[in-house]
Image (cartoon, rainbow, N blue to C red; front, side):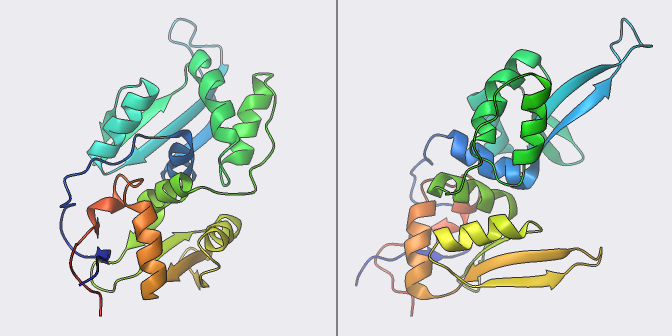
Length: 223
């Protein structure tokens, strides 16, 4: 029997740790389960004055990936409403992190550029191509490796980033649906065996959440 990649229920069983985090992975995760914004706040010492702060944050219900994100960025991990959060508003860290993220993000690009503009920093060109690390980060935030249906699925309300992911993965189909809020959501999804095997093989070492369902099952065939 040949070796294959199957999407099956259960924890990752190959005993291999995921690849170290990269800025591309963090950008993909930020574009789904994160935020970047400018906010007025009042310092405790001078409550009647307001200061503008740039803020960036990542959040997930998966504690392990947030510990990894916090370790990569040198930031503590918070917890609120069953969600783990890594965030900062420190000016020196914002100046260090945001240029790297803006060069790699799609949906948060404009928000990150507003922060760069406020701090007087140069604005990088908007990215036009993706990477496997970015796609893995996006999958970990707003994707779905199906346990029972043997398919891969990326979703979001930003049509452009879904189309970029579809193109990167080989022009896999895109679907749209109307949400109860009235917004349109988009998803790109494949259940074609060869495509799923090819993509899952690339994502398994790069993913930190979905990899728990992207199990490498040796000596098995997907019929």
